[in-house]
Length: 537
Image 1 (cartoon, rainbow, N blue to C red):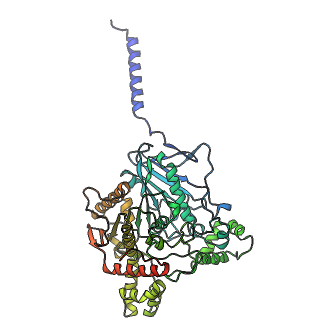
Image 2: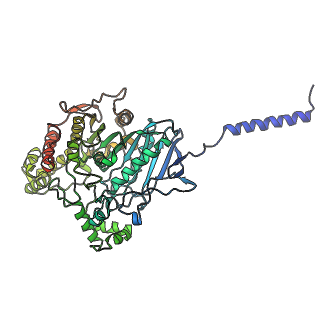
């Protein structure tokens, strides 16, 4: 039966409407924003990349360290109500401008972290990389190196964090020590890092991470801090592997909170530095010392520091967070026994603006402040017969200090039965920075696949970047960086003394005799200062 034309017309309109609705249902907008519930409340994150991978940015991990909480261990967060937006980075820690670092907004309320995950599911159980930035523990921030997107796409959850810096993170003072139930002060930045790792333990499974497969990764001061965490009983069980780039704290001595150290160019004690800085602030003592210190505006604290850069702020041996010299702890096998991937860059110190001693006598005095009665042996490794030759040897010495530290940590790790994978990064970029060689921090461009706008690409950098990212992520996944299709990277063996060169070519090479002799001299200094001889040489 043929339907009347009016009915056929209405049916055609209905079909057209249904077809349009079908098209609308296919052409939907972006998926709903990801949500996660952590111990302190609910978060709403964001997406990144072409596959809509998930990120949560600016997540608070401790109470704001302000007012009465300034210069105290990080305290638990109060639970918030509603949904907290987590789609932009939190403020950096208070810091002075640094010429090498783009400035971003800072606040004393700075304890925030960021998470990138390729599988946003509690069942994913992916390995986790926690990154601590460099900057001498005086500058830097969590987004300084954009490692999250490129590394997470290789199958890991990546986390970065801000922590207290400079006079807010590493200020020791007798009044603070007296107030502390642990008779300690100064290592607030390290305590923040420990709190980050506790947050990971308690929350990372909700983002697809496995809290039992955590690798801590740091560059420069971030790497130095990781060795301090490895030496801290407070870090037990919080991470299972470590990647350390251009920094460590176990081959030399560290400033002590109260005892003077006559080596490694250490000046005074942690508390002495704190008292001097309090004097700079116009607070010389009295029963209200802490009240006055804590009521001082943050910008005035930074202004006083800017006027007296002779006062340094760094991690110290405080008797609690770092119970004794890390060199002694590692020498006696009391550190966290975990596999490490460790190395340095061939030309670390070319970007430091070093000012070499003017005369040979001044140069010898400089070395004597480093190694005491062993300074003549150090001079024999970096000799100079004329004032004009000092800058070359001085630069070589400072470059080698990084290689020496990485080599020492690899030796010590292997001695205590864990695998260590030692590298030397040797890639020298083209263009205006070519004269700097393989400078401090350059490897981070390869890890993040993010280069300066004037970088001159030539293909070698892309191949090396892919290799480095694969090695690093494979180490985080398995504790062994070896990856199919890449040159073999055997675990370090003291009798072979080999490292993997990461440069235009990738392959095994022997540790230089100069670095080995320097490491032996440093070992003598440590043994004399601590009574711990370290691994058999």
